[in-house]
Length: 322
Image (cartoon, rainbow, N blue to C red; front, side, top):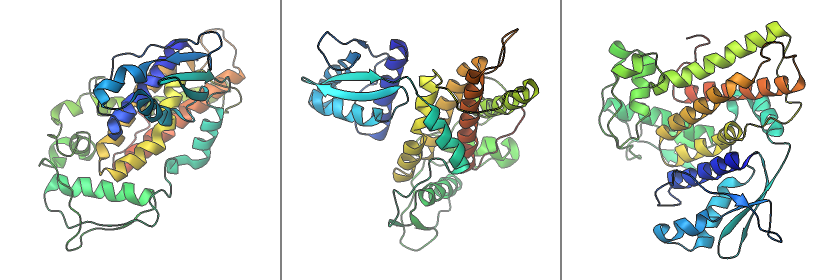
């Protein structure tokens, strides 16, 4: 992990804290990390908690604790320590990602499902407005994936409040119609449906589905080259690994906050990280296949698994080819 990678990892943790509502600050455009001073803790350090403390209305050590919590078990980090008035100190690891990839491959589409909400009972009142019906459907699925007991369409149950929106299946098709209603936060206007039909990188739905199709193509190409996925050696892809490792927390937060848009935004981040990584996966030119290629292919396969699983939660298909 390079200092630039570490900076992005910490920035991602701050963004998660803001998305979760744990911090109410403006996410900075970048976060500075530097070598720890002689005698200090760890290999690198950052004063980000001190810079955010005033706007957050908290002490720097409180802010550091919130960020540290979201950095635990991050691929590439062996440890995070809070020192002094609120400095974050980082110790790097050299075996990032292999264990995470194995976990994803073992869990398959159920990666990120859990029992955090076991024992919780949720009742939803019957929804009639089209967008409310769709959002409630997906929230029910998210809650059940976290172990909650959910009963929809009962009198006196909880209501999901949304900005109204039409479910335009006939005009857009099911996938684009669902993305238009689910990608925006429930209280925001739905996305304009027409741009979601364009096969262009500005189309968020296209990027997510295209990233999945690229994984399928990489696996086919790898088979032709005699390269199969296997997490044998560490892969230096901290951004992709970090987003992949966030998936369980994102699903849980989406369930708790009744916010399917969190899943959609997470899939976008995963797709962008995967598309930036894909060019390193298979041998190029006269390069010979190696264990590193097998590990990179395993990581790409794991990312594809999460993309397909996340789209499935939203009720959207993941085509092998686009």
